[in-house]
Image 1 (cartoon, rainbow, N blue to C red):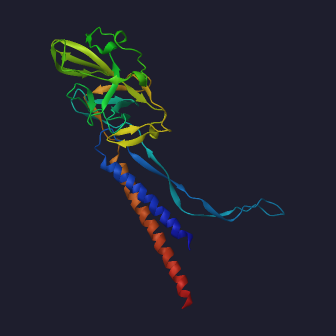
Image 2 (cartoon, one colour; image 1 turned 45 degrees about the vertical axis):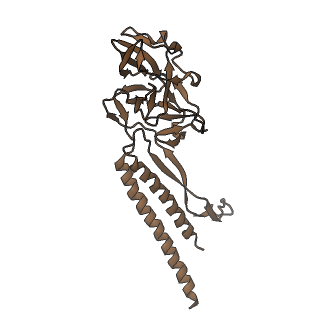
Image 3 (cartoon, rainbow, N blue to C red; image 1 turned 135 degrees about the vertical axis):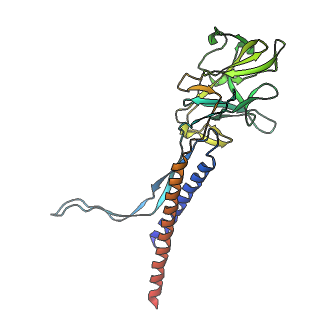
Length: 301
C-alpha cells in the first residue's frame, strides 16, 4: 500500500484533534478563569531508503534518503497567560494580579474523600453557615486569625499581631468563616483588600476574619483541568507553594473584578481556517493515492 495513504490519515487525525481543542476554546470564551489550549504537532518516524555515505575514493559524500510516514500530536498545552479584568462591582469577586491560584476544597462526604483544587475563578460568596465558598460550594482556603477569634480592625491594624507565618503551608490553611453575628451584632458587609485580608462589618465595628491564601506552581501548564474552572496537581506541575497575596510571586488581589477567559477569538478563528484547509488537503492526498492505486489495478485490463 502507498505510504501516502497512512500519512494522509495521520494528518486528518491530527487536525481533527486541533479542531477539538479550538472548538473547546471558543465555547469557553466567556468562562471566567478559563485557560486556552493549543495543539503542537510532530513528524512521525521516517523510513530510510538509502543510508548516507561519507566522502572517499574520489567521491563526495551522499546524503541519505528518507520518506516521512506522517505526523502525530506532540502536545496539547495549556496557555496560562492572564485574562483581562471584568468589573462586577461585587466585593467578594476577586482578580489575581499575578501568577497565583485560589485554593478551594471539596470537603469529604460519605461517598468521597476531600479534594483540593486550584482555580483562577474568584467568584466567591458566603453560604448559609457564613463560610466563604465558590460557585460550586467548595470552601475557599486561607489563614484564620489566631484562635479563630475575629480581630477588631482599624486603620492601625497590624496583621502580624493576629496571623501566623505569612508564607503559609498547606497544614495551617483553614476555612474562612464570616458568621451572622459577632458580639451580638449582625453582619452587614465584607471587604477584601489586595493582601487577601477579609474584613467584615458588624454594627459599628469591623473585624478581620481571615486571610485568603494563594498557591503558585513551578509549572502551571502542567496542572490538570478538572472541570468547573478547577485545576488539580500533577506530577509535572510541581507541588503548590502557598503564600499570602503579594508574596512569593503569587500576585495581589483586586476586589470587584473577575478574570475573563484568555481565549483570543481572532487567533482561534485563524487557527480554525488553517486546520480546516489542512484537513481538506490531507483528505485530498488520500483520494489522490486511491486514484493511483486504481490506475495500478487497471493495468490488468
